[in-house]
Length: 165
Image (cartoon, rainbow, N blue to C red):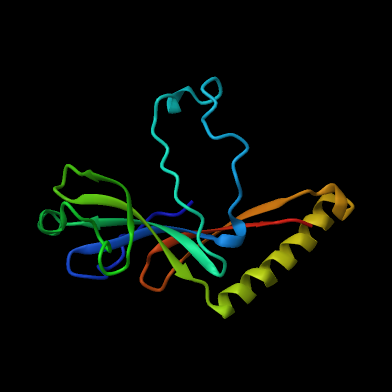
């Protein structure tokens, strides 16, 4: 558990708070395209926003941003990064403190060093899973991991990893 400290603004009165990064190699098709209303009744009737899979060598970034009332008024009917980065608006909500919280998505190329780091991590985790489970590799159909960290600016992130053994 960690206490979230608000990062410094990356632009005047704009804060990047959290990011989920999903490399194209980690995207899978869900087993079903709806929520199981018996298991998760709280999701009944909720809208699901599907975002296209990023092209090979790229990752989908889902980013939570906070903006001041002034920035929100100047941005609407657009959203942060719409023109400069080609972001897609997923959702937004006005907060009681007059700020707006935004969820936007965009694609970004994965650097070679990041790709290599993810492969090394997958190899380490695969070996650890084999040892912990004391199983033959064929008995572990798929492993998933969620890497949690933070950038030097304080922004928190998850990176989704999936691999077959």
